[in-house]
Image (cartoon, rainbow, N blue to C red):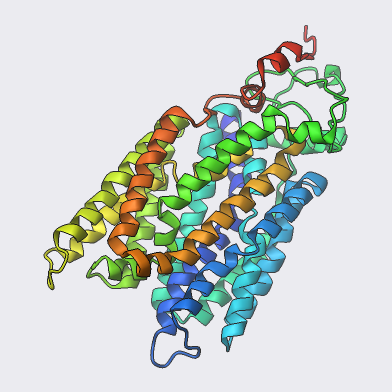
Length: 480
């Protein structure tokens, strides 16, 4: 018989999976590049493209990401995480439907462009997970998000190897309809409901989740925060106290320029720069081209499936270390990626000019380890950290801002990669990526803020100046 703790965990797993299913679709958006571009190169292809047009097909979903991130980030603060996520399925359904019937390059461009409105909205999911999961198991549930992206990529690669890209798009269109309906069966987060003064609904949501709060009638009423009609201190599952910062007279400008906002903003931005310069997303979008240029003899689509399998394996293994410090995970992740990519680069330098280098089929192995180690931190943490580090009053908005920055950096990396290879050569480009992986490990070891094992309030307090900490007033309910 399942005990109460198990039921609570199953409910959290269910809600996390329902909300994260959107990232299964986004994984298909990312993986669709490796499906459609090789098929457009065939002699009987409906649409013919050159290298520049192919780079636009790959990068266009990232162009509208800032708009989608900002809009849906605001909507998540205004109307809730759940409804905001459901609305993201509207552009996804339209775009996949258009791609499933595309007959011209413009149709493909428009379809890919529309996916960008929803591609950058993962912050809504991260915030939902951060607000509903216990502190000690939050990393586990955040990694489920990453697992769904990997499953989406794997599915797109398998479908691409079996079917025409029209059929693949149609399959994902049907999944979008399912994804829109599923959130009707999960509640909104109690934190957001209470921040909107919807106390009764918040208590019903807490009852559904199984949160245990003693004497909730004695909890103090929290004042509204600046610039948003809502905020409340984090309710942890470890204790039944509520902390609230009583800064009721802070201006909107003062809120966004406070250390609790600009410090995590700089940390997140630096982490995103390291992530994009590491080359992971370039390999994700151009896996077939990268394998060919690096002289891997395995078929491009087969190699894509191998890389997706490595991604899933890395995600599953990283679940074992979900309680480890994020600094440690980032250091290990960066070093593992550096060693793996250095192996590839070393091979290219060692056999430069050799017409038939040995063991080219085995060169897929370091690429797989590169992807495997990326799943420990370099890929998921820049995105998930945004959902943990910002205070409640600006969390939705700042998640949208940071996701916009992350996706625009990704757009730049994807768009300029073919140009960089033409200018400097494949060896120089991936040598730079290997060096960036090492820099990322140093960033993780010495700069990255630690959030593991901390409540959301404790994370926010870590960014406060000493004077702010001294002035901070904590309100705690007296529970006999």
